[in-house]
Image (cartoon, rainbow, N blue to C red; front, side, top):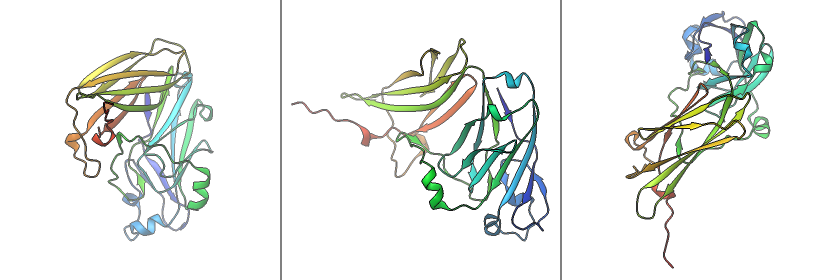
Length: 266
């Protein structure tokens, strides 16, 4: 279950206080509700504050874990829940997920996004670059305007959180390959839980052992499509969709001939 934080957000200036406040919805750019004389460059050179209030019920807060999910953030931003900083959107991740259950309360809650200037050198000392899978094609950046280009939402987790997905291509000497998907998860509450992994038109259902932290799916690919990573063609990509305990993660996958292993007879 998830709750979209899609209603109006109040936008306020932090640099030039003469700019009037206004409300906007995401996805979108801050410039949609700002005076027309402000160029995108002028907007990017200032600091801004976004605020949104939402309600949570007792039933929603019974979940042992609640993740805040934000994606498509252009420009550095600090995110706060009920006045407490919970994450930095610093460009190291396409989608940011943080567990925030301890910061939430029954009834009214407030989320804030602060677009701030920062010292890049200092930031890099405190942040590790997110690991990139060689098979996963990152989403293309289509917007450079300051704003939020995916609707933020809360993900309520009843039993198991999907921590991350690992992919591996296993090539056969005689042709074809296997595509292995490892699901790494964290269990909060015991229960009957299964994962669905869809790849190349086939869906495998995996029972989740809550005493473990990993499950694997293996797909046979008889005639794999090779992708040229320098000149990507969307027709050469595979779609991987993982569903676990209400959480969904989707990936574009490029099988690469350059990663094949050649076995030579000795």
